[in-house]
Amino acid sequence: MSNFLVFAVVGALMISAGVPLYRGRVGPTAFYGGRLPRALRDRAAWTYATRAVGRAMVFGGAAVVVFSVVGTVMGVTLDDEVPTLLVFAVLVGSIAFGVVQALSVLRRRR
Image 1 (cartoon, rainbow, N blue to C red):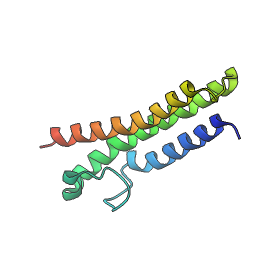
Image 2 (cartoon, rainbow, N blue to C red):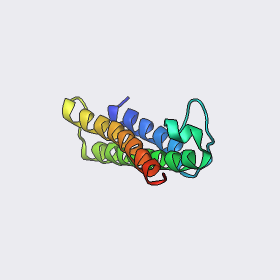
Image 3 (cartoon, rainbow, N blue to C red):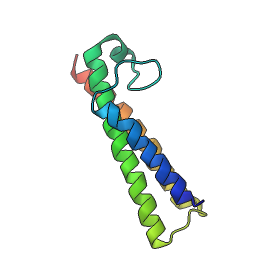
Image 4 (tube, rainbow, N blue to C red):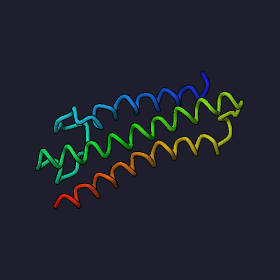
């Protein structure tokens, strides 16, 4: 199985996990969502923080899927470290960006 296919599946899973968060369909849970201390204390803060994380997950997952499809079409192989690290950086970066956005949203809501 191609590494691009693996990354495309991971991107699709990220999108499918992010959509319910972005749409505000997930209430405070012990395992899923914007689990920041302030968000866990206040339901409205939870919704805002979780939507920010979900939005970043959806866009990051979509970017990974697009990169995977473009890489496959262009014939790029992920045997080299650089393409693999770039796709991995998009995955990790989008989650980090979501956490920063959630913190920013919570800070503005004070």
